[in-house]
Image 1 (cartoon, rainbow, N blue to C red):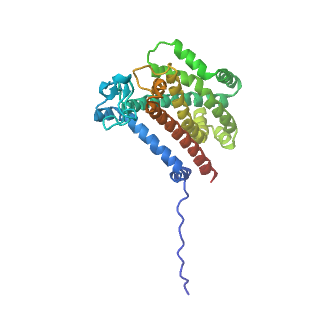
Image 2: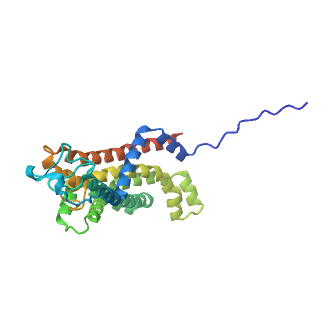
Image 3: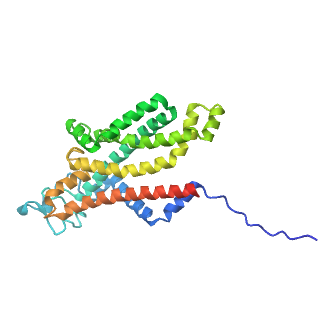
Length: 310
């Protein structure tokens, strides 16, 4: 007598860590909203020339018809000159279009923050792994350099250094100065994790099998630092956006007439009583961008922790 075989439900392949992380982010409203706003800012930065071409106003084009010269250059209208022609209003006195300057300012802020993050990450990873992997006198030298740089009040020394330098290529100077004071914080974390990994069983097994130093670093240790590096890099960007804005606000960052959010906020301080929109709009863009980057980095960290735990 033959027994009918019952069909068995075949289970699909288990979800990878990447899929679990992506699924967690897709079900997180805060992460979705933050990503959507950041996508908007990136699109504005990338297509800033197109925005100027469509609106007909460049970031440095004066529009004297948009301001009331009899009242000291206050924009026409009750909302800082917001109209169909100037969607976010205009600057007092000169009538420059705020939308165009916000778009070009986003380009400057994101480029500086991204470049500083990339350089900081490169220096932090290379020097942190070198200290943790080599140990001995190499570790001592790198640790003393990190302690030396971390002992400085970074913002004060950034202001002092940038004030003493000639204008030159200001964005490049900003990236260099920010990176010099920023890499030790990442390097310290990378060094600690490398020290914890270098004596693990899988690294010892690879070393015993004759793996080269490069193979140990790039195939055994670096992949295990990936999640931490992604999270720390994501959380570094908002800090550098704020740093660039703060330095520009203090007059040692991006030089006029290049638009910058911090520079716009600095210029608006004397006008907030009569034209609050001039202060509120660039301030809102800066606040929402930093908040979105911070929230996304925090949600990414939580998603990585959940993905690795499951």
